[in-house]
Amino acid sequence: MQDHRLTLELGKDGEYRFLDYMDVVTLDADGDGLSNDYETAHACLDPVLPDSGLDPDQDLLTDPCEGDSDHGGDNDGSERHHGRNPSSASDDLALTLTMSRGPHNKLLLNWPDALGGNAQVDGPYFVYRSGSLPLARADLIQQWADGSVGSSDPIPACSPCFYQVRNTRLP
Image 1 (spheres, rainbow, N blue to C red):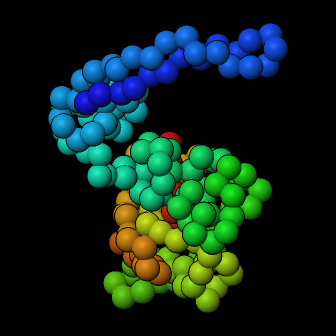
Image 2 (cartoon, one colour):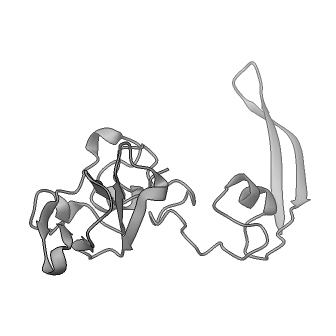
Image 3 (spheres, rainbow, N blue to C red):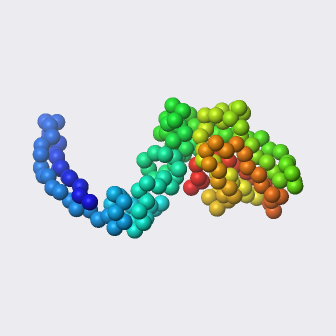
């Protein structure tokens, strides 16, 4: 893998001046087109496994490890798809849920498109449950692909139980 580096200097007169140009060979142990340095700098990537085509944060955008750049709770891909700004938490949307009991006393969580602004919040969806707040990444109980509108949970051990359905993974 080869990078080209051009070095410029900004002079006091506001003009750029050419300083240097060189070809730099960078290592890419897995041959996936991402340098070892880049993959090492992003914890969700592996420099020895070809993973350039993966999207570990599942936001369909460029930063492989950060699904919600503005930390507002709505994934960047969903925001961009619906004309919102992935860099501004003020326009993030949350899913509106309904809860009910289903067969065998399972708890049913539903987020149909017709409810609230749900049609403007794309998946995938991550369902978290815990007996205490705040919820954490380890509390993930289910993951659903985009297009899903509900989840069920057998009688949980916690009482009370706190649930959250998000379209980004918790950090």
